[in-house]
Length: 118
Image 1: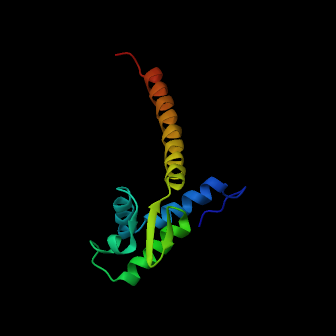
Image 2 (image 1 turned 90 degrees about the vertical axis):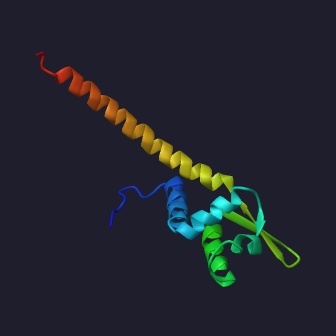
Image 3 (image 1 turned 30 degrees about the vertical axis):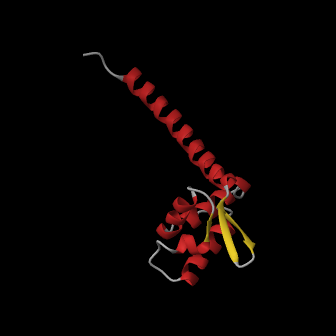
């Protein structure tokens, strides 16, 4: 297991929670369903081949990570995507992409400068 010398950053911890939540294909499907707009738990459960309690468990994981929030009005619980957490994940991925692009650009420059003329 990796150990951080200075500890993970708050943004890194948020990204960890989001990655954990999105590691399951059912939860990713739920996020896709919610990308079309808010939906009740029953609407989310309708296309899924599982019981309503199983859908509730997946929604709890998504809520705990901050990817989804829900509100209850009467007997209906409506779920919404929480863009802040998706943006946190996007920023984490973009930072890694930028880092590796810089590294690869330096490697390309190094290789180009070290080529022997033929």
